[in-house]
Image (cartoon, rainbow, N blue to C red; front, side):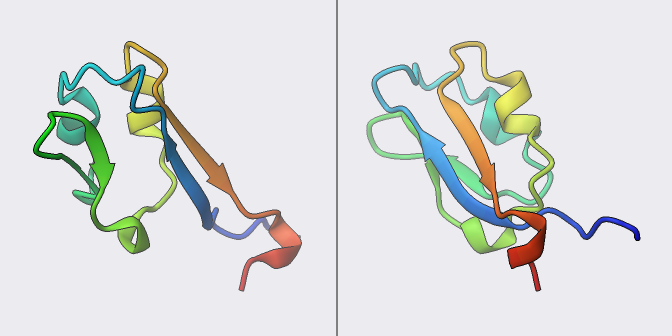
Length: 75
C-alpha cells in the first residue's frame, strides 16, 4: 500500500538557537517561514507546510524541527 503524504504535526523552532540568518526562510518552497521583529524564524503559515524538511536540513544551527503525524492519523 502506498504511503500518504506527510502531514504537519508541529514545526518547532528553538528561538535560543536561531540566529536569524534567514536560510530557512529562503529555502521554504511554500513561504511558511518569515523572520519576526527580533530576526528570529517563525511559522506564519504552518497550514501551508508540505513537510519537505528543507528548513530543517538547511538550518546551520539545527534550530528547526518538523514533526509529522503518524501515517494512521493522516486523512
